[in-house]
Length: 139
Image 1: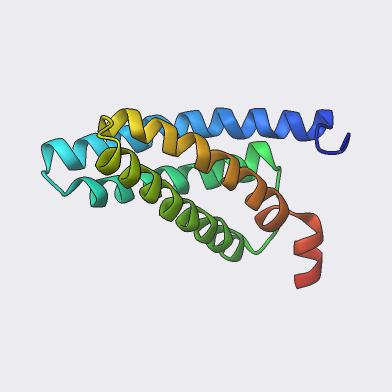
Image 2: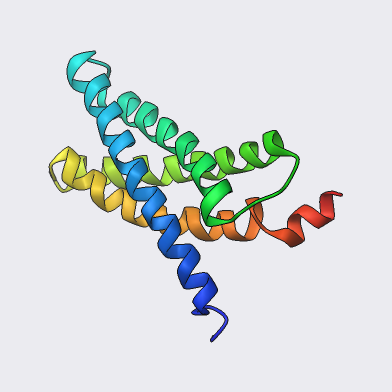
């Protein structure tokens, strides 16, 4: 259990959170622009904002959070995007549930969805995308 709360893991999670927070601005900004200004349906706008933020987050996490030196950038990026897409499904399901069933404000619900998906994304990327063991299996 002490490995779960190691200083290195906590530091990576904090960095991941900071990167995610920057992605929050990208996500909300693009979601707002596409939903409110371009009149794209809210769930499609949500997907566009989410994927834009995921792409930005990949590059920041690769360089800063996980300090990846994997030369297979496109493969690593693909893994990150697949994990993000799974996160998008989780995000959209939570968003739909909170907006449709509980009549929560769309943007308040989005905050809850992002919090849940952040935990998913961190551990999935830690153990899959940026795992030295997973990279070693490939090469």
